[in-house]
Amino acid sequence: MFYDERIEKAKGRISRNAIILSVIISVVLGAIRLTNILKNTDQSKYLCLVILEAVIIFVGSVCLLIGFTRSKIYPKDERTIFEECCFYNKASSILIKIVTVVFAFFLPIVLHIGLPNNYTDGEFDRILLVLSFVVGIYVIYGFRRNDIYFNYSIMENEHYCKSVFKNIGKLAIYISCLFAVSTLSFTLLVAIKELDQVILIQHIFQIVGLYMIVLLKFSLLYLLYSFLEKMSYNSTRWLSRSTAISLGITVFLYAVYTFTAMLADSLAISQAQAMQTVSAASSLAFYIDFALLIFLTYFSYEYLKVKYNKLLSAGCLTILLSETSAFFIGQVWSGITSLFLREMIEYDAYTITYFLSTAKTIVQDLSSIANMIGVSLIIIALIKDKTIRKSNLAAIISLAVLGGIEMLLRTQTGYLEVNIYHSLAEIAVLIYLCVLVVCIERSGARLLEQ
Image (cartoon, rainbow, N blue to C red; front, side, top):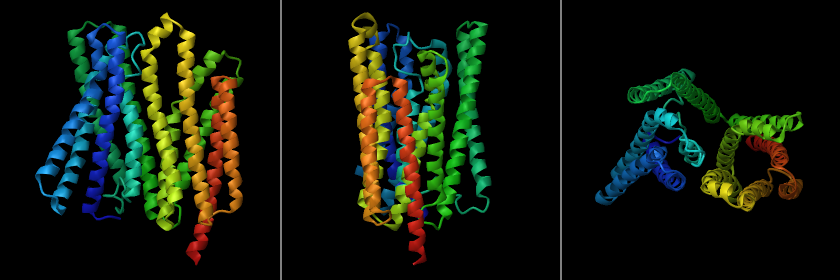
């Protein structure tokens, strides 16, 4: 593992790029949301819905400007480069704290104001969801690529588990502070506005429930990732158990989602009710993609440490970029769709709906093709290294057939049936990846014996 100074340098570069990525994403989503507000509402009070994007753009730009100025004023040497990296590490931490505090303060206000007739795109915290996925995946990939652990400061601690739970305690304290900020904001709102008692109780439960879910979600994610990191750090095998577990989690979550969709389709309920059930389970898609991308980062990092292979690196990176881009484009497309919502109601709804759904289908098909290319590159790379047999080339043909059937189904059947088929096909590919992991582990065991 790197010395502390080298770790700070690598973290600084990752932090700088994460700030740049956050600003770019906020500019795109903020512009779409602001256009929605100005186009579809006549009340300026809804402008607070874009406050998070504005804060990220402003604070992030100030951090980048200060960092750029520092790099131009001071001469480039080891000391100044190290100080610049330390600055970006602190700047990213400050940005996160400012954004979360602003979110906590405006949350009760947004709950009270509500959304204007469903004409704005998504909820108040959409930008945080997008950043946690896209930027989060980039940070995880950057850390693995530079052989850095999130818990590097406690990795060799004899009481590692105790230290992890201490960090969860610190997270709980921080979220409690955010809850206190929301409580203060809510108190001011109650003092200024005369709220109905029923609405008052409803808002209180919403805020308490949100913070409890956030604490539980991030605590479990951090606990799981700390567990995976420790196993990867202590592993003496070619592929650590972290790789296998992250892939197993992906398969399990996909199976749960697919079973829910198939159950909803088989029950004696309306199509609308079935789609509502699938939509409720679709929150799993976030964790499915996250688990898959964690597997790819571990898989590529651990394999390339033993055998450097450009094709395998390109295959894993293709899937990483495909999944993150598809997620981001999906959020952008949701916002663009809401721009035409009024026209869809007042004018030719069928034509506009057909155009929007066709464009969304094209994006989904392109993502599926990119994923097929990524898996194909991984298979070819493993065959090239003689890690697996040439018979696995048949899997590439199978991938092409599965993808072709899915694209055909998109033009012939409904949304729910295509989703079920897509999930089943994905599970088949993931199970095949499990087979590849077993083959690599066996090949690695033979290599270590030699």
